[in-house]
Figure 1 (tube, protein in one colour):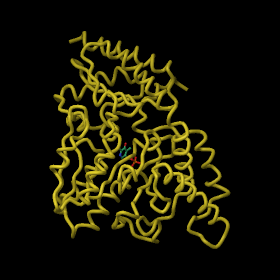
Figure 2 (cartoon, rainbow, N blue to C red):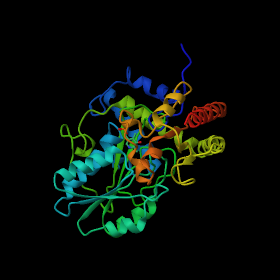
Figure 3 (cartoon, rainbow, N blue to C red):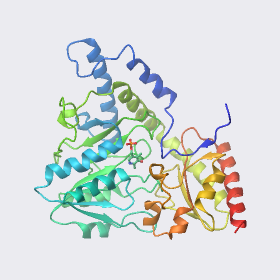
Figure 4 (cartoon, rainbow, N blue to C red):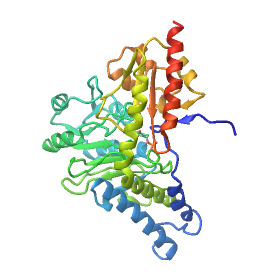
Length: 385
Ligand SMILES: *Cc1c(COP(=O)(O)O)cnc(C)c1O
């Protein structure tokens, strides 16, 4: 096998942890039952496993197991939350507020609703990527039904002030949805303290399998109404029909359980690695840090480079490291990232940018190799001009 580049693209996806895989395996073969089968042990043991993940996820965000609705991932959870609320509450109002730096899985459902006649306010962000709470307050209208603001950004790692947003929404009786795909298992989340009504989750960014996620749907104070986007056998309290994917659900639970147990030490370790990388890169002239320097995910470093062509930079880095410029979901698109553009960068600077996503399986040795190669590549490209 040829030597593969060092993986530093943990915001795109992560490897399944061996412990997660081991927990999943029996549910493909001997414990293959349908969790909806109520008349035999095959169904019961699958249902018990699903129940256990519900409990783990609920405990992770201070919810109850009944408030967890399994989906195929965060994309589906976002669609269910946003379109489900729009359809259930349109008689109350048809205005939704979101943010310019959201993932396309939030922006696109909002644009779709706009095409149906809903009004969408897209809030700008400040230079550091954080929203301005006074701007949010100004955007509130009597007909606002939903505010959707992500927990942690997938490009610049910025952590939005969830508790403050939740408080403001709650005061105005507006539902608050957060896309926590990058946040679960990495930062503390508490739907009660943060007054969150809907929260999207996914497994594959925290060392769980792809193709499984969940939506937290508040049942009390207030009881959130949601129009299902997929109809069928009435699974998941009618909100999301379809046979549950037991092995993936087991893996999701195990992944979150491990991430929570290791959250504190891993946050410290990743922060050190990120700082080590930044200390080296910041020696080079014309390198800027994108996003708030402290209020960000421990493993995220996003930089822009002056005087360098973005495509040439990526090409030079590729043999040594697997990274991405902008978000992976739009990597075929050469337009500058909508997130970096929202920070107010000139287009050229936004384009020559690198997102480092450091994760559980990265070592200090790897970080030093990456820093050394990145510096050499950047300086040689800068000297060519
Ligand atoms: C990865 C990601 C998604 C999409 O999640 P899937 O489970 O892959 O559908 C949505 N939002 C954010 C912020 C993400 O990082």
